[in-house]
Image (tube, rainbow, N blue to C red; front, side, top):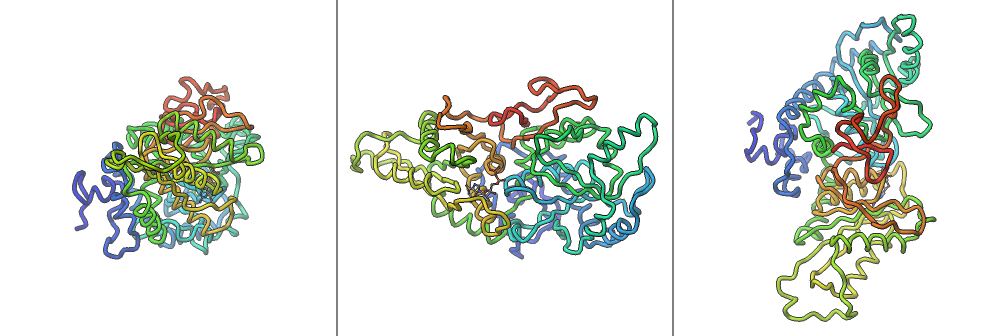
Length: 487
Ligand code: GDP
């Protein structure tokens, strides 16, 4: 049956209320997570994708099929782009296909939040998203769009295009210089759009309609970003209405787009399912602890462990230990015993081992049984390492399947897990030294990732008030004062 699934039908359940593309063949088993992920996610997600978002996704899939890699329109566009360097204002390529190429920067969490932002930008601007995956990203995700690929073809003529590529900043500056003489600048055909986080950057004015009008003229954008820049799209007047229709609940952007885009490949999915079945499925409650240590020299393991315990015990995320140091239990406590499964993810083995020993050495006051599991400890963040990224994805996904999350400040690894799972986490305050702040953690107000480099100025250059009306749908992040996130 190729008819679109309607809400509340079994196929709609399977496809996450119509969010996932239905033009895939279940029997081919090429992407099992597409048809099985609903079995593992909390039964009734309170967050349903709007019908407008669903229709935008279906339209996008058609566009991608028409203009995507190696279609005849793609081939024509590439030929035109490599032939000419600039064009007159208002002219366009003959195919009307325009593109945004996502390029990788930083770790997997950073990559996933910037890819989701790039995809939303593509939806808003009718661009086709292509992703440049090196071999370190091989075999992580299924293809999200039916009958097409989102991967940048290996024969993409970047070196030929590079000759006449311009930067976004240069284009904006040139436009400003010319605006006094009211001359039109000629638009480049290919543009480097750098939205990466850096403290010295000048204001980018990416959230301004005027900049978007300039970008509209450019058929090929090459994006470099490690940021979740969705909040700046909500600031852009010309996008705001469309975004409100797509996301009536504004704090669910990554929850929906992330579940749509990032379906784990069969290899990853098999590992996720087996781990879940072995260590998490039978538990009465699943607790995820994501422990990211940014400066191990200044913040010893013991201090961080102390912070985690203070946070989790105080907020009743983990049960307290009794005073007896034996493992004797009375008969009555054997009955109706609840099992808590604690998933620890960290680069360091210390945390999982410590917590496991703790709950094996002494019984809990409540009589609850606590099992502690840490799937890996890679010791360091590694780059250009495919297996390392696979482990990261498995753990991000497993965290998203928990009922309660505790995450580390300013970590996009944790952001992705919380948003996929629609969980407001307890966020451990960032430690600067050996002093643990009081309180040690805070409950987040939103499931969205934090945007670490929001604009500081409005489109006229006036400083923006981050607490007030200048950001109508966002608030400063609990883990990073300068950052903003949707609520
Ligand atoms: P961020 O740096 O914390 O914002 O998160 P990123 O995901 O962008 O980069 C950190 C990278 O380090 C991850 O992608 C992983 O490769 C690795 N990493 C960090 N924490 C963990 C962890 O708990 N488990 C695993 N397997 N890898 C981790």
